[in-house]
Length: 121
Image: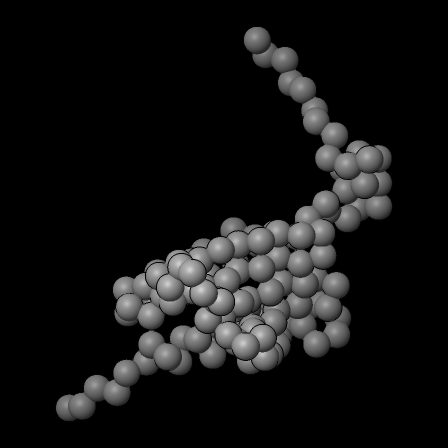
């Protein structure tokens, strides 16, 4: 029972023969950072649900205030834009671009500012 079976990942082997993955996903560190922010927003009562979607050219993370509505924010990772305006884009509820960038922490800072509260002495 020690047989190793290699499954083909594309029409010409892994990545379709050109070194490109069949779909874009989040790396472990990226996903940990995103889900950490999601957990803090849930604890603050601002979000209740999330969804992730993975395609050939982009990965999406959407956060919802309620389950049956448009996402309040949608984070998109599009590696093809890495050398241009940055592979990370944060969209608002109406689809407007809130922030673009090369680094995930800078893009998520827009949302993290909502958690900061003024504390008096």
